[in-house]
Amino acid sequence: MKKIAIIVSLIFVLSVVVFAKEKSFTGRLIFIGKDYIEVKYGKTEKIFYVQEKSIFVKNNNNASFTDLKPCQMVRVHYTGDNRLIINKCEIIKESDCK
View 1 (cartoon, rainbow, N blue to C red):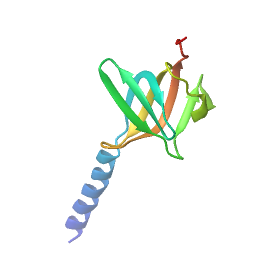
View 2 (cartoon, one colour):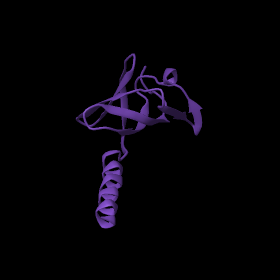
View 3 (cartoon, one colour):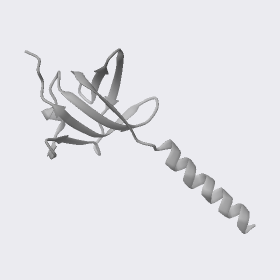
View 4 (tube, rainbow, N blue to C red):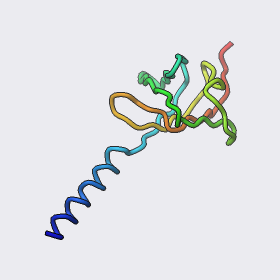
């Protein structure tokens, strides 16, 4: 009985770790919505949604959603498969659009 409980516990813990795996995407910020951003790299465009826990960083300092500008290069750390949720968004390079 103890073996079964241990195996079930291990499966549960490992499945939580696998499903919550954080990924990252680096590209140019092409659109800023009310609660989401759209980032493009090459032909790939992804939409990332902001939540209360989302962290924004600029020059290794805390920033906010309002610091995001079109054409900035950003690295987005996110979770999710269908709805991509921002955990952390780093502004890598300032906007060069004129």
